Image 1 (cartoon, rainbow, N blue to C red):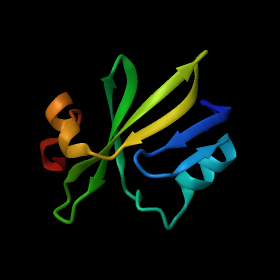
Image 2: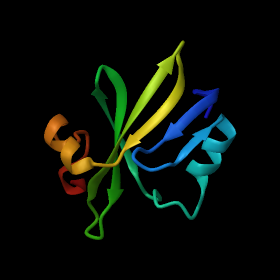
Image 3: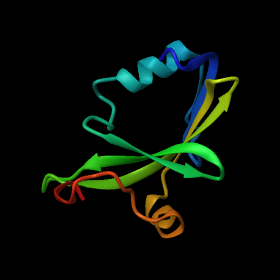
Length: 105
């Protein structure tokens, strides 16, 4: 949370989900009822920006790409997080996430 600007934003196009402010983003990320429980982030670059594949756990114990989180970094702090949920299409453009053990894929 310390890496987020106080006025950071978080969105997930095409949904109308949009938050502004470190405290609101923190609440959303820590919500125990959120669907991201157990997710992992794998670093990648996209459009010249830092980004992360968001992987969700599968019943078989592996992980599947769920979304691509792009960071907008300004003066060393995260000003925005945008999560693109069309993971199947994005995997064809960027390649599959790396950095996981074979058993995790």
